Structures are given as structure tokens and as C-alpha cells.
Amino acid sequence: MKHFLTLSDFSKEEILEMLNLAFKIKQETKAWIFKDYMKKKTLGMIFEKSSTRTRVSFETGIYQLGWQWIFLSSNDTHLGRWEPLKDTSRVLSTMVDMVMIRTFWQERLEEFAKYSNTPVINWLSDEFHPVQIMADYMTIIEQNKQDNLVIAYIWDGNNIAHSWLNLASKIGFELRIATPKWYEVNKTIFENAIKASKISWAKIIIDNDPEKILKWATVVTTDTWISMGQEDEKEKRLKDFKWFIVDGKLMKLSAKNSIFLHCLPAYRGYEVSENVLEWAQSVVWQEAENRLHIQKWIMVWLQNNKDKI
Image (cartoon, rainbow, N blue to C red):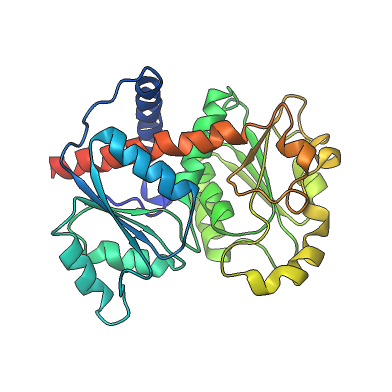
């Protein structure tokens, strides 16, 4: 059974296959062609962590594929509280054809998938956000930036940074990550990416200096300045990330025709300035739309893989 929990679970060929098929389904959508790729299938959507873009893009995509969906918030379920998580997984996977989970804890995803008889998708956890990075890379390809690609990620060593490490180590491009001290990426995830890079020839650089990381980068990206569950860190983060705001001054250090990405929501003046977000080379709105298309084909790809078993 194939699940979609981290990009490290897939080969380069599988990742590129999913991306190529996402372009196909995007072209069909733009041409107003909607095929019932998965008619009469049902997706269980478990949101322990709320979202705007994830829910809207998922429900729209499911509708366009001919699916039905069941939305479950943390208030609607007792996931892992009164009933063991493995029991919930066993039951739900007999009632729906696929499950997506947006949660704080990666280990909950891993346990749910272990006992599930149907594909499970990570739609964000504390450690990884693979679907977002697939949408980002899809946008990079559309912008013809995949050749001689140098990605500079500036902010926190969080789930976005970890998924960039996974993708770089599989595809084989240059990835630079700049975080303040004490906000670095997880050591184990970094070491695993370095090991995988020996096969893909990826180049991975970790530093605490955003100016150094940005020089000649072809893609510049950042993340929301504070994530859900970090509200008590606001004052400290304002101080610690003071020199990591992606503004016009920093962007000038990147390559002449570089593009800017942001997974959204964007807090202007915190992690990114207004002029950079609205800059002509900012492609964040195209990036946001691509969440819809890449998510659709990930679901189709997983279902096709399940049907072959």
C-alpha cells in the first residue's frame, strides 16, 4: 500500500510521474474538461489543524474528480483520545477509499497509515508538508527554472524546510537553507538528506546568514512567520527573525530573473515585505493554484497504485 507521508518515500521517477500527470490534469481543468477519474470514491478528510487553502483546494479537487468527501474536524472526532488510533484507522479504512490528515504530529500519521487498508495522505504535520513542496516544484517547472536550479529557503527549520530537503535529495538540485541559530532543521532529517544526495548529486547548504544563502539563487522562498501552536513565541520570534525578512534589499542579492515563492498565509512586514510579495517576479498566486492540481493527481496516482495491488 502506497501512502503519501513524506517525499523521501518516493523515487525520483515516481515524483516526476506525479508532476507530469498534474500538468495533464491542470490542462484539462483549464479547458473545462472534468473526467470522473474516481467516480463514487469517498475521501475522509481529518483536520486536527485548521486551514483555508487546504480545505478549499481539497474539496474543489474532489468534486472535480467525481468524488464525495467527509469532513471531520478535531471537534467531530475522538481521534486517538478515547479509542486507540490504530482501531480508528482500521475502521475508517473500511468505509472510505482514501484518508487525508492535517495534524500537528507526524507520528500520528505514521501510526494511522500503518493500520490503514487504504491510502493516507499527509496534508501537513509538524515535521513535513510534502504536498506544498510538490506544488512549489510544479510552479518552478512552469516558470522554466528547473535547469541550474538554486533554491534559497529563508526562515525556520520546520516542516517546509524538511520537505525541501526531501525533494532536493531526490531530484538533485542545489538547496540552501538559512535559519537563525537554534531554529535549524532537524539533524536526523538533514543527515538522511545528505546520504540520499550522494545518489542524486544534490548540493545542500545550511547556514545562519540569509545574505550568504541568497547570492545568485534562482528561487527564493520563505514561510509564515509563526505557525499554529507557536503563538506564545511571538515576541521572541520577532527578535530572533529580525534579519530574516525577505525584502527588496535581500532579493537584490538573488539572480536577476529569480522568482519568489511563499506557501501562504503571508504576513506582510514579518517574513516578507509588501513589495516582494506583490513584486512582478512573485509567483505565489500561481503557486497557490497549483495546490489544487497537484493534490488532485496525487489522489488519482495513489488510487491507481491501490487498484494494482
